Length: 60
Image (cartoon, rainbow, N blue to C red; front, side, top):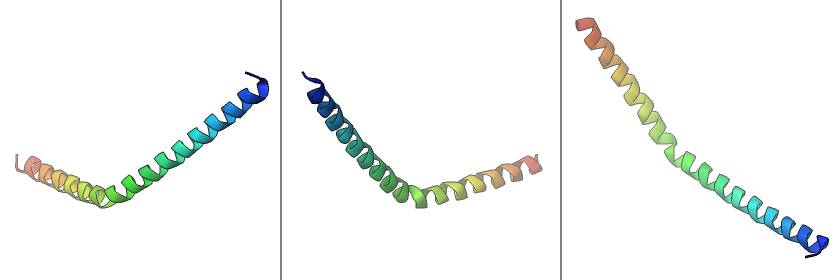
């Protein structure tokens, strides 16, 4: 394999990897946007758990 062919192959591989990375980033952004409302619910539930824990500690 000549140096030119090797450089071409490396360039093609890098282009492929760049494309895959961009696809993964887009997927992660989509997942993040889908989970955004769920995060708020988890925060709310966590706050309720803390309040209940404090309530029971005060009673004991």
